[in-house]
Structure formats: structure tokens, C-alpha cells
Length: 199
Image (cartoon, rainbow, N blue to C red):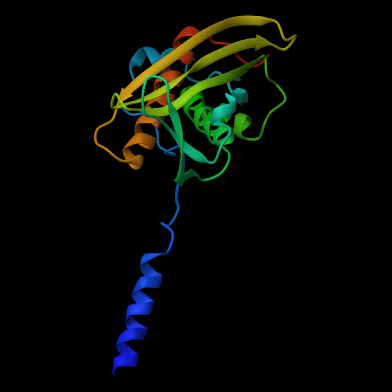
């Protein structure tokens, strides 16, 4: 009996020393934009093909990591070890924004974008310098987008920063608020970028 109790105590000690399991997050929600204004919907007129999509996403060096990033003070950023992105963050941001940007296109245009049609009149490049949670209780999404024609001439450059309040504490709430920042970015690109269509 004494040996059995020692064995149970050994097992419990072993279990308590196990590392905390890692949690993976997806940076996109695969959902349509809700509460979209008519102005947003009409930027690209219904039935017209559209070619506005993110060609490339460049991340700041500190964001090229598997862990979610959190700002702990005005000067410090830390990278989570147990709360990780489920894949490349740059690819997830690109996929999410292209999904959001295509929602104002006609059905045929969405199909053309999904099949990577070569008929593109413009390309959109994105530099992301901020994509983290803050000790101020906000998710911060910032950087710059650049719209270029097929000759690589810059049509418009626009910096952006969105600070979205976290509804509650925790990494799931942070990821949700970061996604809301991407939704705001897509809406502003629709408004600020001229309605370029495939030629």
C-alpha cells in the first residue's frame, strides 16, 4: 500500500511538471464584414470586375515570429511562447485582406481574383509595423499601404494605425480585436483607393 501511494505521488509530481500546452490562433475570421456602410459597398460599382488585392505583405522584423506580440510598457514588447499564430502571419493577413477587399466585387470578379487572373491593373503592397496587444487595453494595427500600377508607378501611399479596444482580457479577445483592425483597414482602402478595374 505504501509503495502504491508513493507511485501515485510520483505520477502527480510528473504531471504538475508538464509544460503548459501551446495554443494556436488564426489571424482571420473567414466572415463577411458586418455593419458595412453604403459608401463602402458602392466604392466599386456592382457588376464591375475589380482587381484590387494585396500583392505582398511585409512584416516588421519583430513580427516575423510564431508568437503573438504584446506591449507591456511604453518601451517593451514581448513575444508569447505558448500563444502562437497557426502559420505565417504575413500570409494570414494577406488572405484576410483579400477576402475583405473582394466582398465589394461582383461574383465573377471574386472568382477571377480567387483564380489569380492575370488581368490586374493595379497592385497593393502592405507594410505592417504594428500588430500587437497593448497594456493600454487595445489591439494596435499599423503600417503603410501602397497602390501601384502595372508599371510599378506609385498611385497612392497611405500610412495607417488603428487602436481597437479589447472587450475583455485574454489572447482570444486580442486576436478578435486585431481582426477588427484589419476590417477597418480594408474599409479605408476601399474609400481612399480609386475604383481601379481590370482592363
